Length: 385
Image (tube, rainbow, N blue to C red):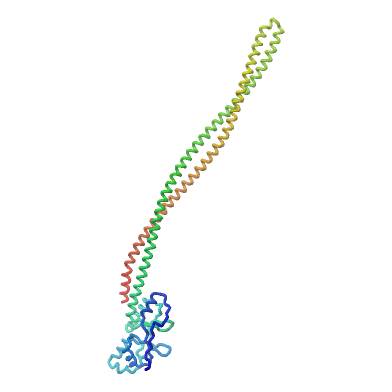
């Protein structure tokens, strides 16, 4: 018996279909039944008694000529005089010449859209799937509706998975924001404490500078007093030298007066007594002057040492004052930097609060979108139906 129909199953065909929609199409599409274009209707009737198919592809050697929808074939055969007219006629007279053909990569929504745009008489015909210009399967409108529902389920599942992942990311962002906010608050407290300490240290250093400056001024005043005292000591030394020179002269004069009184004899005795007393007074004056000179010399040495020590102390005090001023400047700079850091932390806290508010709004939007997804998918399916 000669085979009238060639049946190609999809099990032996290898397709490259990466997308989930392509895999669904491949899984759903029906097996193609092919028949020679010049077989008669009686052959097709016999075949349909044992095989169930809704569509037959009519072929000539090496290319397809068209397709026959089985329900359309039965309508023709069941019409008045249809059986007698068509039973021995070639089946290509029933063939529709322009099948709607798609690849596995076409979106299901586009396939349905184009199928529904056909003429009313062809709207419920099958659509065909081809791979490398070879028809590998067909889909009925019922298949397309089921595919649409499956695709919508996939979309919903993908959306739910994406929303779950997005929600997890937003939750992570909220936790990070809370940590940043907490850290910024702690940083503000720490910066505030450091700022207060720096301000107290700066105030203390300012007081130290004022005190050091006061001591430095006091030392300058003491230096001036010591300098004046040294000048007075020098004046006293000069006066003592003058007194010593005068006593030496008085001593010489009294000696000469004694000699002259001796020459005068009895008449010069009274004068000799006076000269003797004057000479004794001059000697005592000279001795007292020597003692005073020694004391003044020792005092001058002490004043000189004191002056040297005061110069050294004044220099050290000046260095100390400079260090205090430098330290005070550093504390002022530290206080300013701490103030800037505190302001930055406040700004960070404000930004973290703004991000938290935005993430809260995002979470609310995600929940609303999650609730709306199912309704949207259902409504989309109903639109196709």
